[in-house]
Image (tube, rainbow, N blue to C red):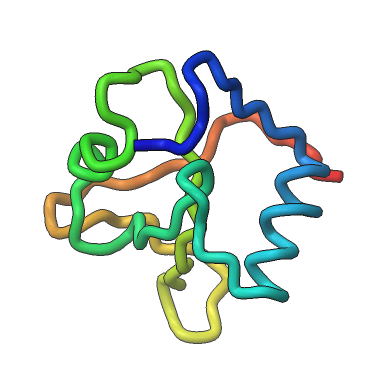
Length: 100
């Protein structure tokens, strides 16, 4: 259960996401607070299992995670977005966005 009151809205701008959460993650080893969580999204859990564990009933809710990236090959720049052994993948949004 989140320690936030009913009706609390978590709306992140890129500046806040990078300057607050990512900086704390890097410098202070931030471990999550119920709003931004640690989870290996490319690990053994299927996407629906991750959603059930963290998102629950809220189908229109965004979830925020810190996750390790796995490269497709050693020294390569392409990211392996494969999930478990089912052949599913996570994908990027089709539109480009500039962060800060």
